[in-house]
Image (spheres, rainbow over the protein chains, first blue to last red):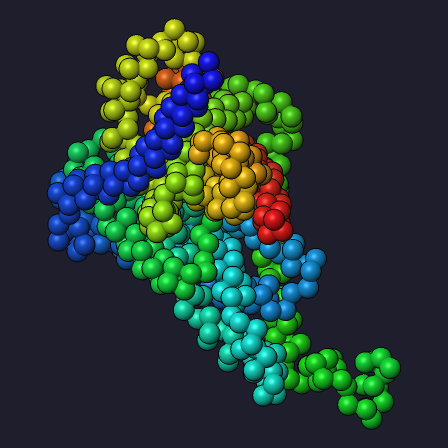
Length: 284
Length: 327
């Protein structure tokens, strides 16, 4: 009787442990499949025109997404200019100056802002910028993305500043440096590699965002000079092209998907390799 | 002798390490403190402004429909009659389907990575899984439309109908798009979060716990399932809440595969609609202030749902961080 029970326990052990392995394998193979599909379908569709030409009028084959590539870069620039300084300074505050209660509130709010669905951030930027001036603009899209960059930058900055050894600070203080001088000339440079990669990760994350741009930056089939006009971006183009009924547009959606995924993954891979070597950063 | 007293006298130098306010001001410390504080407060302001804008801009709809908004099933832009029920239903159903798939898969993978795989391989695999979390959602949508939907129509759907077709949730025609498809795509998107957080929590469980269980004659699986996982359950719950909040708010991938039909259907094969999807689809086309206001109120509802879940998730994770650190 007890032999049967032991056999049962042992086989259950083997079965369940195997299943956990299968689950891990399944998840990793999803990544491989995503990459495979995009490289296969996107690679077939990618050509030089994609990077140099404007979209053709509806119904005509060919053309490219040069305006969307430039548009995405412009939106990222806006997000960086508006979001990174706020995130950096708030991160410095949390790591260096903060007391207990107020810091907890800020940290908690940052986490909540980080968890706000991106479509809601879109509504926010819409009612803040688009509604008063009554037209879509690159600027509104930049504000939406900046609101998403801020919380990620705050947490990364705080974490890396905290990982700088106390002895470095004490050394600077002992030489007579004031606190802010210590931070500006010793702590920040020591943490700079981490802080900068954290910022790049934040930008890589918002580079793929579509939802907050749908009704802020909107889209544009032509070049968009300046910052006050609707502007095209790669994620929105992928969305529009994928749900459209034209085969040539599907082809271009795959090409755009490959370019976007390539950019995001290369940025992530590079950043995470740097960070993992330093061995301090937790992504979630 | 207090510090303030010495400053006023100016005769005795303050003790090392605590300089007077005036001195810190001269060195720039107070200014730096104030400036960084302002930036930190800006985040508070930004978040409050977000809530304020959602609240103010949905006032028209809140005044007209009141609480009935939540259980009204009509969504009639032409007649100006709006209710949130089909969207709340769709959001919850897709999120639950995705959790039903992602929790077993993610927890199993996390157990494998934390308990069985050698640390070196476990770290590399986790690295790959973190990359999976970085894939933009519109890419998942693209793959959803062109890979999952056809697969659903030709393989997965018929297979489920063949085996479990007698259940009411699997009745009705299978179009390829619908709650189940959206749930599957969502599951793929949230699994990396469950794995990543759960694995870290499992790794914080003290070695002695495992050794004690194994020493009492438990098999490896029994030690894991009856000792290690219960020990880590708060953190695992936190990871699930975090994943759920993400599933509720996910827009693009769901919009592209759910079929966008504001109906409440019992069948998972039926097309539906979620809050995020209806906002994405109809916001730019919304004619009239009431229509826009109703969409913004939906945004407010979505915000509150994720707000509560994220708050709970963070509290759970903070609780385990403390518990894990002490043990």
